[in-house]
Length: 68
Image 1: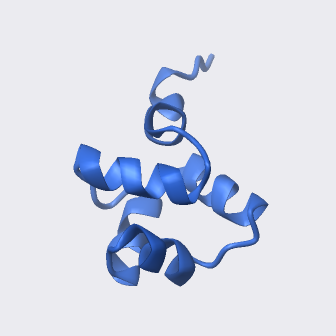
Image 2 (image 1 turned 180 degrees about the horizontal axis):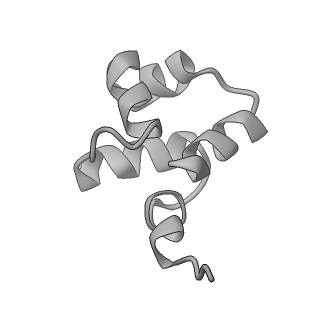
């Protein structure tokens, strides 16, 4: 999930800082960021709050992107 990584880096946060603030493990956050795990909507909301964004932008933007 490239959007997660971009948002995290833009805020100068490390994965463990996002995970701690979202009340999830660092390994779970890492798997979400790499697209290996799909979080519940509740976890998406918590991550979005930490990253000062909304779940749709972070988790669904890439699914709707047009590519040729």
